[in-house]
Length: 231
Image 1: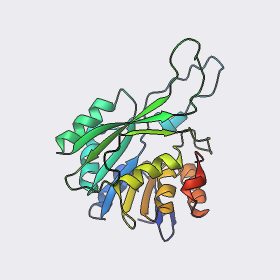
Image 2: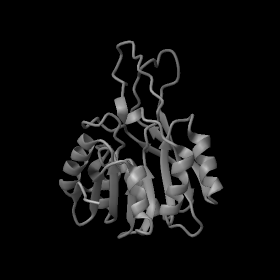
Image 3: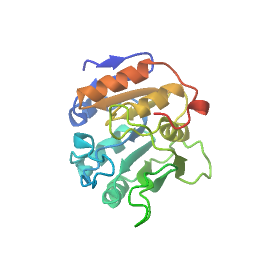
Image 4: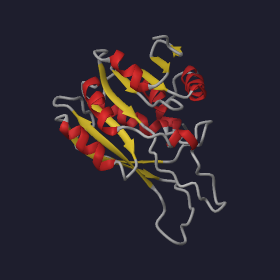
C-alpha cells in the first residue's frame, strides 16, 4: 500500500477501509477510534441551518461485518461513534466477539438551538466502547460522559473535536501505542494521537478529506491543554 501522507507519527491511506484493513492485521494496533457514516440524515432544515452532510454521513456501514474485523485488529479497545438507531447493533456485534462494552455519550456544550422552542435540543452523540480483557485503561473510575463543544466545520461537514478524541486516546492507550481510524475524515483522531505521542493510521475513502487531514496533521503538535474545542 502506498500512503497518501506519512510522517514520523501518522500514516494516511486513501481508499476503502474494507480493502485496506486486512493488510493491517498484526500491525500492533492498540485502539481503534472511529466515526463511520451514520446513514441517518435529516435534510429538511426549513431553512434554519445546513444539515445535509452528503456522503460524509450517508454511506451504509455493514456493522456485522466490520465489528469482527475491528475486534481482531485492536489488541485493546474500540470506540465507534454511531447513531442511536445503530447503537444496539454495534453493542451486540462486539459482545459476540467476547468484548466487554459500554455506551459513551458526548454531551455537546454548544448545541444548535434549532427547534429549541419546541423540543429538547439535539445535544448528545453516542459512542460504543468495547474492550478486550487486559486492555489499557488510564482513567480509573471515570464515567463515559464527555463534555466538549462542537467543532467548527473545516471542509468536512462533521468533524469531531480534537480534545474529545484526545480524551479517548488518553484513556485507552499509552505513549508510543498505535491508534487506527478506518474512517478518518478530516483527521481529528490522528491529530489527537500525534499530539499525545501516539502513532496513528488513518484510512479515508474521499480524497478531498485525505487532503484536509494531511494538511491538518502536518501543521504540527498542539497543546491540548489550551486547544479548547477547536478541531
